[in-house]
Length: 296
Image (cartoon, rainbow, N blue to C red; front, side, top):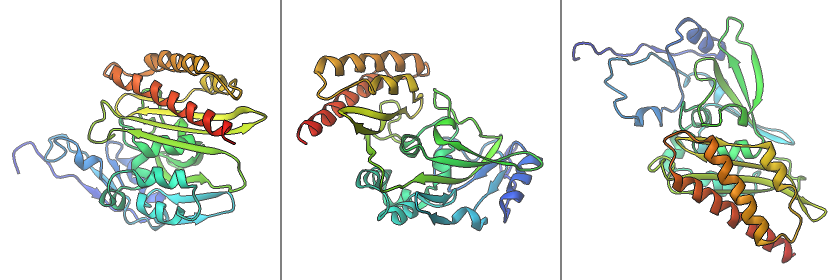
């Protein structure tokens, strides 16, 4: 091995508590799920600054899936393909299609649900999909007591897309709402490849229902993989002012507001093309919703 390089120490805990204890004693170590994203980074190995690894592969509790009446709960080590297989008879057609569009079957069989949510400064489709659906995650805090708390997926990131709990918590479970009696509609779109072309890709999610001729309870999420994670209660409130049928002028006005909001939210390396794409995508989706309503 070249001078100055080191092989990482690999911890192999068998329980969540043991994994958190490993991290508590070695804060520079990284939790390792599928490793799909980590190993794809330039100069991952060999690297003179190689961090130690806490492998989660041996923790059986993190590989379990549980289906209750109103939600599906998946451990952080459940692969995206396992989630898709389990949810194929539970999730809506649109949600199944959104998850199916994530990478290739090879990637979906390797990438884990937890790992896809916890990349440090890159956001991918799963983050946007689950935030739009108001999914929640369990975090085990890196403290001596390893206390647990549930938080919405939308609260895992700042507006520039940075993961807020990289060295302070272990994400252990994801809880996805599946109440079939709900009248909520879900729309997901991804332009370009978040992994291969993050500087031009746009990930879009919208959940809403229709009540008394208006868009009700909208929940919009837009992510630029390397520069933005946008959710805004103020913007959702603006969407809820739309009454059917709404005009093209109203759609354009809301689109311009989105451009203004995104311009303030993104990192400096954001591509203006992504902002334009997001605005056009919102217009297309709103026009589709308007047309579908008029068609009955």
